[in-house]
Image (tube, rainbow, N blue to C red):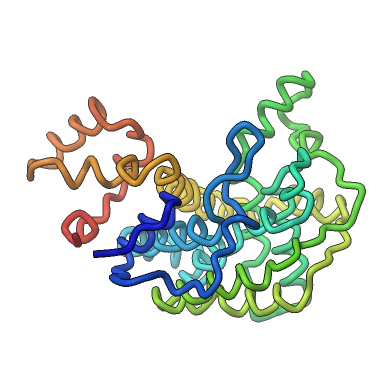
Length: 287
């Protein structure tokens, strides 16, 4: 039986990956790098949430591998997307409680790390998908400011200082690396090593503006965004308690026809938007 830590995300991650004694983390970094806020207080674990998002992407691979190839993407692009989507939460600005848009910072860091690297062909679609993965915040700001929708770029708040990753962030990255090795996710490890070498990024708003203006990358980015939406929200469902993890209600259901299962999810599941699509059958019976 897994020794459950106090943080629900960690409990779920350890159970889903089959750790029976203790997590591989030599030193827990959840007190320094959290995954969400509740009443302005840092909660959860950035490492666990990111690793869970990677796991959810792996579960989507059997359903999404062919569409990904059709758009001239690779599954490695999805793995990089999952690893990098919340990297902005390692920034000192986020950790200090400043009202930053962490998805914007995550996207920018992705762009900077991959600049001039021809081996990462789809870095821009990945960066755009990261930028859009909290688009609801931007639409809310547009409505508040009464800005026309085609001025989406105006919803992005100006950042007037360098992006600095918080003290001790390399240890958090080391902890994440251990989980990625367990899941055999190699694509993200290269970027993690780069992140460990650089902790300051000179933010340039024009880079984000140019990214939004490149029509050619949008089709790829929207497909990646859809995958990230599912994986990120499924991972986040574990935050309040491990019983709320999105797949638990499905595991408690008796075997039934697909149509009956769909109706049951629509009627009873607290998050049908993330539970009705691409259900990972193997995960239903792995416990």
